[in-house]
Amino acid sequence: MDVDASIASEEIKLSDLIPNPYRNLEHDPIDPKRVENHVTSITGTSKKGKLWQPLNARKSPNQPGKYEIVFGHHRVEALRQIHGPDHEIDVILEDLADTEMLKRMATENDPIWNHGFRHVDGVVDKIKKSLETEDGKVDKEILKKFLHEESEYFRRGHRIRLGASLIHACLSKRWPLHVVTQSLERLNLLKEGAVDREALYLMPNTSAAMSFLNVVKKNKIKFEDQHEFAVSVKRTGTFGEKNQELTYVDFLKWRGQNVIAREGAIDFCDSCLWRASKAIDNAVRHLQETHSASTNFGLSDEMSFEVSWENLSPRTLKKYYTSLSELTKMVDKTGDWLDALKAVYEAENVGDL
Image (cartoon, rainbow, N blue to C red; front, side):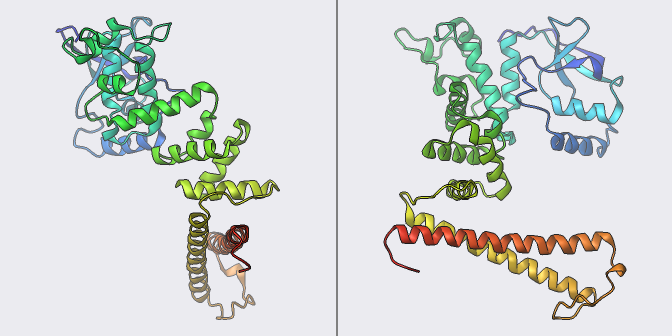
């Protein structure tokens, strides 16, 4: 490990702290929700707006007077929101090489801490690029800074391939191999230009992202259509692969294209029925809420609207209107899914429903 044994602690202004050079904030931006959680946590402790543990940083080799934090970017932003940029905090300064900065950041972005797949992709991409030479091979000198020299990768005759296993070996042991494998698949598709980056990162988690990729590949969805499709998926709020397949059918129907039943018709029908039943359940719930509201407002069971709506607050009216609007949307959606079910049924020559 190329770390200087001498470690110093200094009071440094928040405005002088800059990100780890391996943290791509454009690709992996600060999450406002995480910052808000840190603000709540920091202000709610007995430390009175201070961190329980100091941050680690190194002097920036490129920006005099600035300090590159190893990790803790969300905590720094939270402190800025609490105290302002001129506030000073205790920072542990270390003499860290670039590879050590990357290794430490990978530890912070350990999946065990529930970081999103965007974070994971950022770490895996940085390690891959740091190991890769111009001709696509592995830089063994850089690799020695990640792995112990007694590693199997340095045994005579061992062929070193820059793949998921090697990158996995460079990371914390708590990183599952399949997480790295999936990340490389996403990164390779992005590099090839086969997948829209913004569309992919609209997905809320790894499972949804991999389902999105599978649907895109299976249906050969054009690059220029992927973002609009991803928005449709996000709008439905259902991210499983079968549900994304159904959303794609809706997407095609909305564009006026004919939808032909493919393989897995039975599973498709099951999904249609499941979605329709869920929509009906939600519609019933909204109807019950509306009926309950009508009772509270003094309306009759027949939903007579011969009342003075001026007596209701704008907030109550908005809630009432939203509930009825959702009910209408769900009823319409139920009809769409049942139509899709009928189309598959007839395409399989089962007969009329």
